[in-house]
Length: 575
Image (tube, rainbow, N blue to C red; front, side):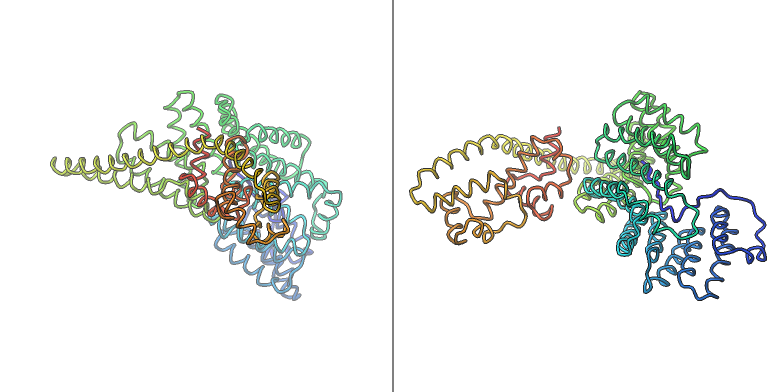
């Protein structure tokens, strides 16, 4: 799903108007008139540069640092990204030691936007975060709200989707406060022709869009569709900037949601309408996305030839994009085309699209690693590289003698058979362990009752009291706190930590660390088995819910106890 960037302080609010921009004419204009004119001619880089440099020259003569930064930030919007980045650096250099409500936050936003344009997600996000920190520090509420859109998007695609939703809820709560309009007024330059009430409605529309996107990424499609309807309702009475862009976004989102809800014909209808109106679509990336989903829907209704045609169109546009700008869903283009050529036994094109998949996986792996290291385990790059190498060997062998072909064929079969045997063996072991784990859940309940009965016959009053406190500790699920230690628990029980450790060892048959791990892991297995929502969490989120400080220690403990990883356990439950 395409996600539009709304840094409204960067976006022109006015249509291009033909002007005779002689230098003499420009010199007669006041400062605000120059900035307004820049907005009007911003689509013409030559005229826009002339206006921006006139403003900048005037600022230098006056020695006004903020006005100079304002001139550079206009220059940072009109050229190719590499040149824009240099102008954005000038904005930051001028204002970093003399910050105020707009700068250097806007300079960092400009850098982030241009890095995003060239597909450098890591540098883009780092600069958005720097911009957000400055906006918070100098209480620029409007800028915080707008920058948070980009952070929400990054997390929703590449990181913790629950955290992205929580960040959107925080953003939405800010724009709902009674003081938001007055906060906006403080963050907008005096003289800027912006209607605050229009900007508030725009923020509400974007909020509905963000909720749509977060729920879509969480695969909560009914909720996503609900917010699409809310967004469309707000757009009916809206008559300001970016209306067509937002309408197209809403339609495109609805197309994707309907596809994933298996309403293929309805999804196709929206795709066709968007393509008929493609002059209103703002980017090639959007057209590519529509081609992709049209192809996927056509395949589902068995129109495979048409599906292939639109896949090739999507592939053609993808070739024009920077590879860093590709998203996880774009991988489907190459997967579908690879499958097509496999079925047609076209080895040369199979190798070509395997190369494409390896390339996009390298980009996705980098982006996932930046946001959520756990995600990179889900990529299949090693398998694709091996598959690609096998294909290249097969292609080269067509020109070799029959004996050599036979040798490589036998060799490949032996390797494949070895890998297959290993894979089947691992899957058998994992399935067996999964079954043992599932069967053990009921047994654990019975063992717990037996343990309670053993405790009840212990004569020592102090030991009795400690065991009762341990039972209460378990019932209240205090073991889910990530700061529980033996010393802290001893203080809670008003006893000696050495004595508490001995009681756990003697009466529960394990040390304190194992006791804590067992409680947390049993909680995780039960909740994942019985609660749908837990299975939608990332491993990191599940780990935190169970009292672990990071995903790695949780996965390690889970594997040590059950012999399988939590990701495999979740996948088997879903299957």
